[in-house]
Length: 82
Image (cartoon, rainbow, N blue to C red; front, side, top):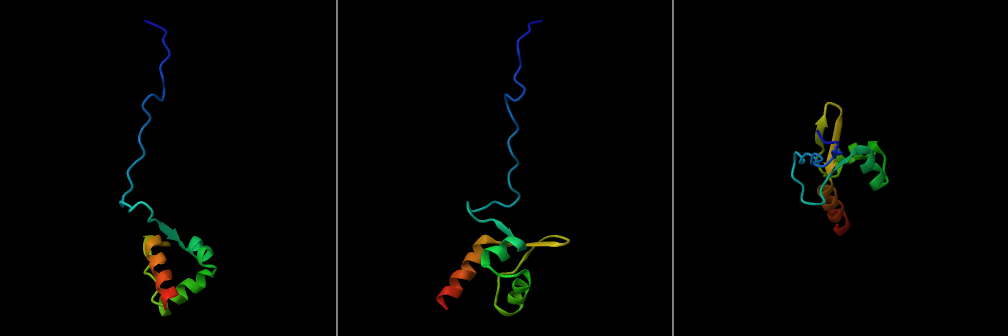
């Protein structure tokens, strides 16, 4: 038996692939981050959903939702043109 050191992390495991393929920049934005990004309250987000043709939320779990970054960007661009 030789006393050669063995590398514990010679072949580290690769991270799992995302469940939903992304286009490179698209990601899900949670409600708090969206409110900060737009400079509004979380209540305003829900009011806009009802009155402003706001992008539909994605249900992530029993008590959590998010929005695709690309859909928010498109919505913002459409408001700037109007």
